[in-house]
Image (cartoon, rainbow, N blue to C red; front, side, top):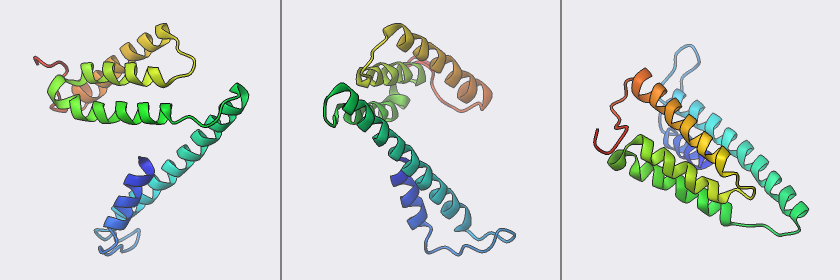
Length: 139
C-alpha cells in the first residue's frame, strides 16, 4: 500500500513545478513525500517477501496468500469502520483480524497488543493532537 500511494502522489504531482530546496514549488513536497513513501513501501515489501519465503521453506510449505489477504481486509475494515464505530472498536477489530494471519498465534500477546494500541492511539490522536475522532460509537 505504501508503494502504491507513494507512486500515486509522485505521479499526481508531476504537472506541478518542483522548484528547488530553497524555493520550493507546489510539486516539491508531494514529489519528495511520494518518492520516500514509495521507497519505504518497496523496502518493506522486499523484506516481507523474503521473510515469508524463508518461513515457507522452513515449514515445508509453499507461498501462502492467506496472511496477505487477511491483513489487507483488516486494514480496509479499520478504515471503513473508524467513523461509524469509533477508534477503540476499530483497533480491536484490526488487531483481532490481523492476529488470525499469524502462523504462531498467542492470544495473550494479542490481547496485550490490543490494549496497548487502544491506549496509545487514544492518547496520541484524541487527547494529544485533539483530533475530532470518536473513541466509542456512543461518544
